[in-house]
Structure formats: C-alpha cells, structure tokens
Length: 439
Image (cartoon, rainbow, N blue to C red; front, side, top):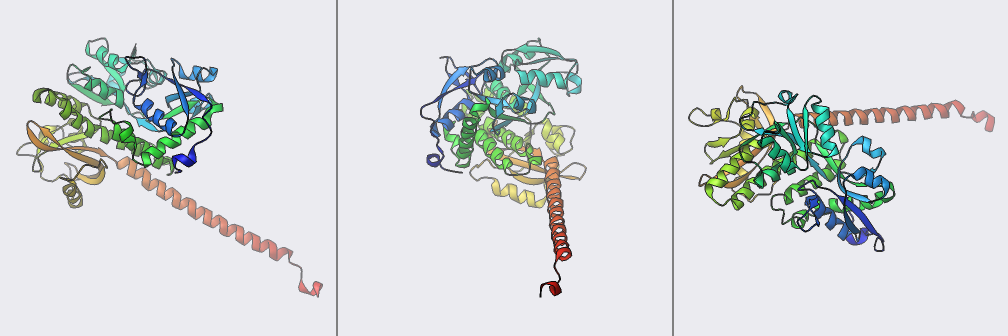
C-alpha cells in the first residue's frame, strides 16, 4: 500500500458533501448537532490523511440524495447488487450480522417461531426489506432507532427487536435492556458495509477506502477510535480482514470477517463492563445479559474447571444445557491434545485479540473445528479466563472447496496451454515449405 504522501491527489480546492444518518453508533448526530459515530470517525481520519475536504450533511434518504446530487458521498451503506445500478459503492470496509433480541423468558426460540410475531426495527430501508423478506407474515413495528426497537420489545409493543451487532450491544450498554435478553440468530448472510457515492465521485470514495485499508494495515485504527473504548480493535479487525478477503477468492468473502468482528466484540464488552460497573453486583448482572445475548459460545473458567457458560457454548459441544458442563459430572476433556497445548500457551500472555483455531470434542465423541479467543477478567470477585468460541466447519469446507476449484482451474489451464502448443506445432508442420522447393 502506498504511503500517505505518495497517494494524495489534488483535492485541496474541492469540498465534498458527505451524508450521514441516524444509525447509532455508526453514524448519527450528537447533542451539539455534529456528526459522530464509529464510521464517521474512520472516514474523517482517512479523508484528512488523503487531503480530502468533507462537509457533513444530514441525509434522510441516501440513495435519493446521491442520485439528485444533493450529496456527493454517503458514509456507510449496505452493499447490495441492486444498489450498484443506482449509485457507486466502494469496496466494503466494515461488516455486521443481524439478529433478533427477545426477553429471556420469551416463548419465542427460533426464527420460525417469529413468523407472525411483532418485529420492532430501526426504520431503515435495508432493515425494512430484510424483515419483509425473512418474515413476510410478521407484523412490522417501525421505530426511529435501535434503542427504541429494544424499548418497544420490552414494554410489550413488539415481541422481538431486529438489531445489528453494533447497535444492539450499544443499546445494552446504555441501559436500554431492563431485563435479561436472549438472542435468536437471524441466519441471514453477513452484511458488507461500504462508502456510497454518485458515479462522478467514485474515485473519491475509493481513495478514502484505500486509506482506511492502509490505516488497518498500519494498525492505526485503534488510536483513531480510542474514545470508543469497546470498538477500536473490532473496527481494525473488520477493516483489515476485509482487505485480506479482497486478496482471496470471493467464495470466502464473508465468513472470516464476521467471525473476527464478533469474537472481538465479545471480549471487549467483557473488559468494558468491568471498567464501567459502579458495583460488583451491577457488573455481574450486566455481564450475564451480554453473555446470554452473545453470538458466540461463551465460557468462564478458573484454569481448572468451568464456572459458567452460555447456552450457545453448550450447544456447540453437543450438550443440552450449560449445567452439564459445570459441577462434578462435567466432562474432563473438551479439546484434543494439540488444541489444549495452544490454549495453555495463550493463558497468562498479553492479549493480542487474534483468534486461534482449535479442535473441539462433542458429547458424542465427534470433533469440530472452531476459532477461539480468551482474556483475563474478574467474575464474582475472582480472577478468571473468559473464552469466546465459534464453529468454523462451514468456513473450512469452503476453503477446501476453494483449493479444489483452484487446483482444477490450474489443471484446466495447463491442459489448455498444452493443447494450444500442440495445435500450433501441427499448424506449422502443415504449412511448412518442403526444402526441395527452396534449394
């Protein structure tokens, strides 16, 4: 990647109008009426380093405003094929997953159960379409923000709240969750998020996107987002992973990005709760909320035995409930020997927030591949290790298929080259002039 000095273009005489909306914590207006948010901070810094001057403009409809020329850029849009016909979308620089939040005691336990339920969601085009496509017979409850969607679910106006990982976690940390929540994975693909632009300014969008990639590669995103205490590494991991995926076969485009982002956010939320808790009781209560609402399997251990785990962790290892993993009857071996060695080597070391691959052993004796990460924390007044884990079997199968396809392609290209050489030799032989006619 080129350095900042050699990559700058002559933008100094132009100011570009960039739109933003109300999608907290990614882009929204603060109490003073100024643009703020994770995506705003990243784009502002990248534009500054490229010498690109931006004027931030509130925008209620990004697509219409871009097409009409009221704005030149938009800070963050879901990359959809149908949008590429209307506006320009840069390479993605962020990724997120969607889920349904329900009260812990709710009767709803799967997406199928929500088929005719009342679903609260932030009134954005992408979310309206997503809910309509996945649950066409559900009753939509459109509200102005994710926090309001959670509130609507908790005060009985809706049965579930449809949220993305960023906004949902912020809602929990801000105290929007008045009771324990449970998460129902949506099962929809990871959303790729990109800069939007009208076609005449697509080069500006790509220059900003290039600099975001450079910030990630130079590991400078964390300092850019230092005041967003739980998100700096999440953003760095996400942008850097998207850069890396760009260099791979697109078959693997979404899996690794979502995994890295989701694993990282769980660990940072644990640390953030420890710092922000006003009392031990409040900290433990909020910690339980987040663990139960997490996308990954979460487990807490003291180096000898498991102290606590969420339902997702139990399901990952083939157990009916977390209680089977705790106490006298708990299994003594959850990982193979090589994986146990890798985990032991990580314990006690400084956190680098890079997941490692391990092999887990299910209750029935079968094995599975997973990615895991852990960090030290305090739980019920004692030092423990908090571990996040997710099955990567599907991703591994995709990688194997990619390698197989690449091998087949290379073999086909090799055979094609041999065929061309053979054909060329035959062509020359056929038209060669006999020597007896020359001499």
